[in-house]
Image 1 (cartoon, rainbow, N blue to C red):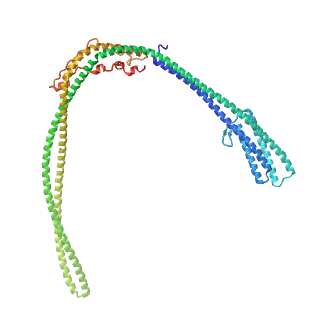
Image 2: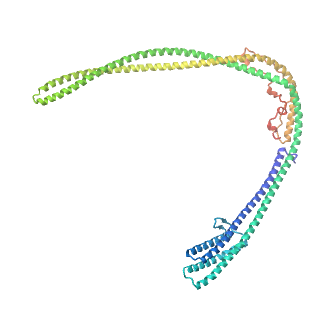
Image 3: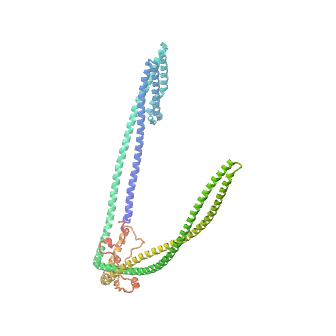
Length: 574
């Protein structure tokens, strides 16, 4: 069955067996560790119960001490304090006992789980059953000694207290003996659980060591077994591949020098032809672009001249308009000055008129009905009024003239604005044309540089094409003779590769064997190609019959990995 399995299937089966062993070992270890954790938890619970039992011993001793203090107290306050302490110790004793028996939280806040030991259960139950009677006798004793301290102590009371004290001491002694018996039993339970825990830990460690040893042994065994199988098959494949590789290397060495010459010459011819065609195309395009740019520059220059002339005329008009506007502004200024003077005169007349009117009023007041002085003043007032009327008339005329001058100034300013707008537009167009001329000039310079480079490249390539073509023709015949033998070796190599793939359980990509055609006849020798340097179009589209270096591969490195025509995926399963 193993002989019919592929290498991949064998490896998978081996790893599955190892994984199964590891899984089984892991499950077993998990169960053992789980038991270990459970035992550890139980051990902690037992320790907590033991702690509560020790606390019960401590509180039982306190109960005896405080009981004695109650009976020997000489002061009522001391008596009450001792009685309270006795009750508190008894309560704590009871709480810890109930925690051991039924579970719960003790006086120190520790969570206690109930015990399962029947002997401990019986002892704790017996102890807790004495607590009510102990409470009762302690209360009666405390009451009796309280009366003694208050002065009510007599022989009858003393006779009652003695048997109560004896009974109370007996109860305390029995409870202490029960707890004293409980503690060793709890210690025994803890020691037994420790032994059980140690046994589980020891078993777990042993099983881990055994599982590790088994896993290592299985891994080594399957590894050696699979390695032997793969090595045996691979040695056969490698031997066959080495034989084929030696044959291929022999042929490759013979065609090495010829292949280099043919490949290099053919590559140079192809590159030279392509460079020639590209250079000529660039030259033609550059010339056309230069012609278009020259025409555009001429048109732009003419337009620039026309726009400059128009701009000059617009500037002259602007100058004349500005002169007119200056005259109008001067007239407006003169009129404004005259108006100011007249206004000043009117102001003075008004002032004098006010004075005369005041004088007339004064004189009229003095003269009473006679009023001779008033007549003189009135005459002067009339004269001043006439002068004011005349000045007002002149002022109106000047103001009207100023308005006309202002209108003329507005008109002239409008004309100047329009002319200035024309000037601005003309200047903008001139600037755009000048920018286009500059850009076209730069492109023209760049085109000239490209033409110079293309011409130089054409010169170099043309000189090398002739010699390369002759070398290609002489080397192609020798290369053709070795191609037949090399094709046969490649066919054998393909068969070996397919056999190798069958051994490892693989298959070709398309489900069929790779095909390699052997060369049954000599290839057609390479023909010399003559380039017509006067015909650009034929040169750029000429079909070159060349043997490229990539056709047969690079034979400078005569290693099997460079000769076997397979990618990495075909052999990656090894």
